[in-house]
Image (cartoon, rainbow, N blue to C red):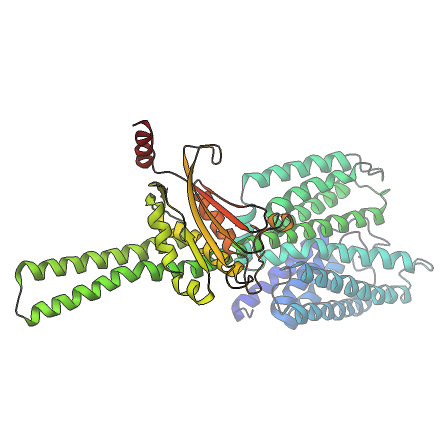
Length: 538
């Protein structure tokens, strides 16, 4: 992302000022008056800028480092050594920024667990390498007492590492308009106030007496982090982790605590960040998988409904063609009047019928809307069965349709045809494993009481086939997405069919057996129920 020149020049002073603010706010418990503190978030700001605009960050970053040594620490190493040390830090941080930019290309740093692991690995190795050289230069200059090199290396290196790990995700999110918008959408909720309030309470509980280093209840700090991660994903976690670290640093500085165990505090900071980000990314990935699955189901529905569309449009289009030829014949004969008017009106009616079919299918894909109407069971089975006539004859399959009761279901006809078509297609695939003469499919129907659906009377349609049937192991997973017994199946047909049935207040299930048994049940249309009850009473 390349910013316009004017914006870039205005951004550099803001970067320097913000860098100095971070440096001053986190200058806590330093060693030997140097920039060796438990938490250094300022490099995270520089690394984000390096990811966005590259090597042009070097000059303002160098100026910020020198000004920080002068204004915050009083330049304890002297001018020339300060310039040399700042130059090395720019080189070290620049190499780290270049590695991040090469790996992530200036975007998508926190998109997955794999990329999160890459980011953590680069940050840990980069900060430690930078730290070793920087502390070695300070030691050679005599600013670090002999024998303390290992201690200061660990102190500064972990401080840099923790500062980057904790702060960089939130700074990265705030660096772009899209990230700021998503952050607002994610955390601008009353729930956010809840876990922030919990964080304040936990901080007081754990660090209320921070003069001592006995953090007996530190595990409570994970509660607001887990809350934010599980509910708001990575964006909520980034805010929560940063607030916690800011609160810890503020309490340490406010209480002027000098007896705390710095390594313990640093490890606590790092673990909070890593655990929170890992949970947050897992939550985001699960939500993305859920959204992808919904999209896949819609695509599967589109494929299944294409057959329904072709079948439903066939009749009105055929009728339109017939009426069109009739109009042409009447015009050629010079006839008009009522006959021609009637033919034109029927053409209009059939075109409106075709448009209605397309509109209903479009509404189903966009909103899941249904048009409930009485659907005669016999007509439904007959209509769908005819669509398989050619395939049944080609594969030598006998389709037996038992007598259908004179009952009507309350359903969206197009969608229920889709379910029945899917069951018949599955049965046709299943029986092809049998030898010729043993390939049979049976469709039957019966009225059930309210026990199955927990409502009024319903109609149960059963599709049985002479295939190998459904085992108990397969039944446990049969209606899960992407589970299919067919080599070329996507495993979405039954998932979609069950979703349609449940949206109608019905159900779809399979039974274990030595042959295939699938049953679907739907509520009966009220007039049909009353008619049947009157017939029984008579």
